[in-house]
Structure formats: C-alpha cells, structure tokens
Length: 181
Image (cartoon, rainbow, N blue to C red; front, side, top):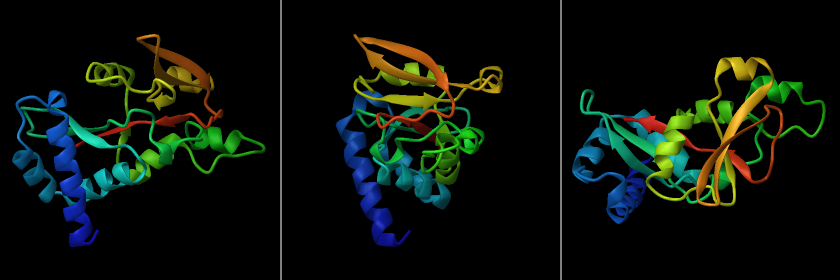
C-alpha cells in the first residue's frame, strides 16, 4: 500500500474506533495505531477487510500478548464477500454454477480467519449483526468431513447457528473475519 492509502485507512479506522467506543472500552487509539504501524501485513489485511465492506473495528485486546483483535463490524455480512461456498473442496465439488471463490480461500488470501461460533456470539453482544444476511463460520472438522458447514445470523432478537451443504452459496451469505494484531 502507498503511504497515502495507509494514512486514509488509518483515519477511517480511527473515526470508527472513536464512534463505537463500547466495542473496545478502555483501549486507546494511539496504542492500536502503533501496533498497526509495526505490521505492514496486518495493514494489508485490515485494508482488505475494509475494501470488501467489512468495516473492521477493534473488539478486544489480549493483555498477555498485547495484540488487538479486529473484526468485521458491518451491520450485514460484507458485500464484497458474499455468494461464496465454504471451501475449496466444496467449490471443486460443484458441477455447474460455481461461485467465484470460497469463504475459506478468500479469508486466507486476505490474511484473516473466519469467526468461530463463540466469537460470532461474542460479536453479537457488541451490536446487532446479520439481521438480513448470514455468515459462514469456522466449522468443526467432523461436520465438514460429512459435507456440511456452519453459518450464523440474527433473527427475532436471537443468534442462530445453522448447517448447510458446504457447496451451497447464496447472495445474502458471506463471511465475517477477524485478525489479531
């Protein structure tokens, strides 16, 4: 990234950080910014989160490592990460009408991880997300081995976890990611 792009990203992140203080009470933007400045790969990953509509924000801090946790906080699953099946195996299994990629592959390319179910539920404690969309989440190997994958959403004021064939994809389903910096 060029210096101007990095500066613009950091300003966007700072505005969001200050607007949604309840997501990271007690944390200081200067500490987050310093951590990002020391990690060009993290800046690229957070930029990819932003470019695909994720609206990344800090949602936690690990006191032991000093790392800050960024997560997609867009109200709905990021627009640039929808209509994806779960992983490469699922994509290869489709005979026709293949989506452009898979959630797992796109996350790896971006340098982020899919949320696990507990992380997704913790995110929902910070706001209401996916009220009209749904998000693939990390799926336990035993479920994936049987051909399934998990996704979550929020409906009727509750968070739901569902299963679907990993090769399925929908215009309203994408994925949310996280990154520790």
